[in-house]
Image (cartoon, rainbow, N blue to C red; front, side, top):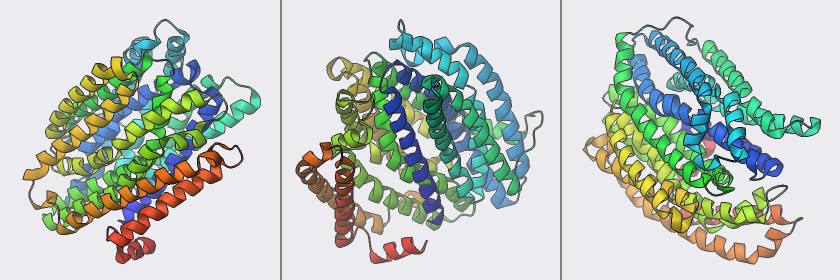
Length: 506
């Protein structure tokens, strides 16, 4: 619980800083060609980062590393070999990706072909693509720190990146620099800064791997055997994102609308889902190594309970007050009302999938802690098929919104498969009585909050559009929602007095 709160607090700060970054970007660039080009270019190294490091490599690396620590084996030597092996592959991949940038941009956003967005995306992509090298190594070092329970240093890294972006935009605005180029050059600079910070943190902990020529060891072969299906699963997830970008690229402004809505729903997803997943995986791995099935079950159930207690009401809020959220938070400068409406629709659709995306982070560690990466891969393939069918099949009817709907439907498809597949894992995956009692209460409190928010948004419609009052009105609206939910949750028993006392103590 302490680890979850630590990661969640820092992730909240990171997401708020990232949201401020995107609000500034929307004000400076709106949804024009430079904005869409940069968003596509920046998504390329981030997409492959999840493919190589955070999603696949780390999901295989962390359980093995944690078990070596638990067993008193040579965990540091394993981390060193993994670091150098990953670095050698990424250096080569960075060079090849930079050379093939026009093809990568076309694969990501074929709708850009023939206009200035394509050339800008290629230019920005070539500048920023080497970010994948730095941030993937950061992800591995963060996995080492997390296995030791040092969550603060690893969680601070994204905050550093977003603060650097904000500073770069302020400087560019003051000095009259080209905003698109400034953002593109900021990407690799932040990568270097993040790697340096994480390296120093790992060195202080006594576990910074030394640079060396990579060698294939038995442990690395084992890592690759486990990581192989996870890499494929990560590739499937990225294909889902690719499908969404491709559909959106054929509608002018849609890439930006999806990206800005994505940032808003990533606030609760990052705070809850990523925090729970980051803490749960090494914890489950150590407990399974020690044969503590009951402890594993308790950790799984409490992670599920915390996740749903926070993301279900957040999802309801994102759906029912999507328009006032987007209007107040984004509508300024180059971002006008014509951008607010489609972005709000996108946010509402994403919001409906928020609990699913969070449950991924809770259910997947059940598999990865057992070094089972094949099952999540098989599930991801089916989710990819669902996503493509919805996004491409409904695009002629729904337009760019089909891309968002495909993501949400695929997310719930993945949850059902993960849940069904985990039923044979014994006690560690069974739901306990406490979760069964609290889940309907969480849903009831969230539903009541949704009704109150709809009524309050209608009553505050005037102030929400008044230039001098809209921030106060939105704060009042959100505050009312929070008070209503937690009041109802406390009254219904979804949250108890001991929960609150424990959280306050921590």
